[in-house]
Amino acid sequence: MLVTAYTLAVVLDLFCLFLGYRFLFQPASAAAGYGVPARPQGDAGAYLSVKGLRDGTLGLVGLALLFLVGVRAEAWFMLCVAVIPLGDTLIVLRNGGTRAVAFGIHFATAVVVLISAALLFAV
Image (cartoon, rainbow, N blue to C red; front, side, top):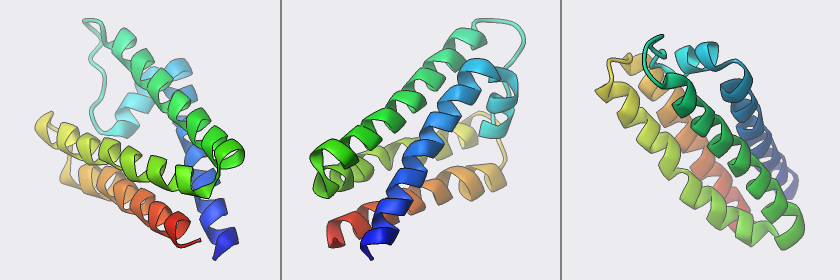
């Protein structure tokens, strides 16, 4: 179970880094994948950059906690971070996104993050 807990945590942290990269360097396609496409007018670029920075930083913090502090700290981190994809589910639903994306991507991600937290707590 130790290998599974570590592997899932590392994969989720690296995925956050990947999402951060996409929102910083491919913002239009990243926003479309998120479920709420960016509108060409307005300050969408700034908000997408904020999301990219947030996601990338979460990935770095998760990796740092896991390797420098330990499994228990990473478990608490994952438990807290699960709030983000739950909020993303609501954001997609409230802004015209599809239920398939809201639940199939964001809610499912929250479930996987909570599973990761549970595995880390069990180690």
